[in-house]
Image (tube, rainbow, N blue to C red):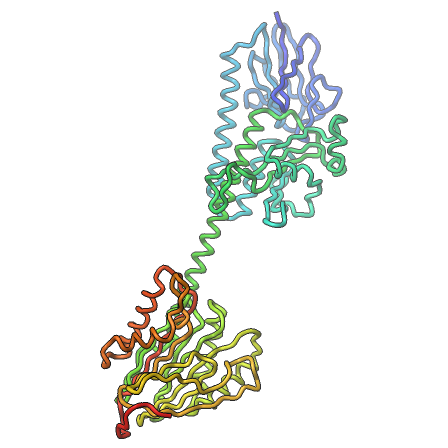
Length: 543
């Protein structure tokens, strides 16, 4: 018949049996104890088991971390078969007596302990789902891991594409945040765990069997290391398709003390925590991305509304002309703009196309539109020169604007200057003419000079000004919309169709032509039609 004994489980789940006879059995950190255990929370002389008659008494002998039986704190306790003993944080001690363990008692005791650990872990994992700030989430993970493992400190290192593992956050045993300077250890173990996806537990770096292998790590004031990968399963990924789970980082734990044997429950608990933490970290990243995109979308919507507000709100009308325009940005905001000016006795209109797309182009376009509204006058060439001089002072590298500015008088005289813009089309009974007179694009050349031309319009003559987003729009075969199709749009509609409707016809034709192809440039169309004024009708267009 077997007598009383103490079972001590190690990190691999193996059990060491310590017989308990008439002699006193001491438990503590000092190597002279019958049961010597390492851990900062274990006192040198922590507890003892003594036999008094037929009873076996467990006594706490003034320990710092306390002594527990079946998770109840005790100072003195009569042990029963199957009792689970915990000293400090070390809990893999079980008292047994008799030939064979009572399977019901052992199963019940182990089951209660496992259920408690499982319940605690589930609480932790549930708490992970409430963390929306990455540092808060990582702090939770490390604190949970330290509590579960009994380590002195913990670190999380996350993978940074192109740069490998990077220190992200560290915590101490008392939930103190540690700086990156406190991460004094070799990268060997974290790098191996990240590369292989296999956890590592080294209870004693000074063990002669492994000391040479961990020579660099043992130079630091640490003795035991526990490192598990933060494994992200495939289902949690969004863009990268791989066959197996892969790590997004590692959870690293260490202590200056020799590590106690780690139970199977702790091993599984840390791996489960790490796996859930990886998913929580990824969800946090995705959540942050979504929030960032939503903020960007809100900002772009506001920018779009603001940009549209800078454009003329209504098409101008007068006894001697009709005009209308529309701008469809390639993105939420664009670099095209148009504007109208009510000059003394004349009508001014302009279209600009800033090099590039998106926010930068939109900002420059808004600035040029502001300069135009301040400097524009009856003389288009002088106006272009003034705008160019203002932009040259800004010295905006690789930023320029193509512009067209025309001034239409009641008598039908159109004075215009084309600064590197797509030549507008003057469509009359006599055919189609391209308005090309002007000069260089506005902005990069301080020596640029500009000319202007005067053409005389007859009633019904139409000027179509458009950005290259119209003429260069391509279909699925790579064919450009071109000038001829713009003319066809005009020829296909009644001659008395108002410019507002004609603008929409051109835009609809471009959309139909490019169906299935994403818009890759801003699209702007401005149409002005001369109705006739004080000048006698001489018919046709001239120069």
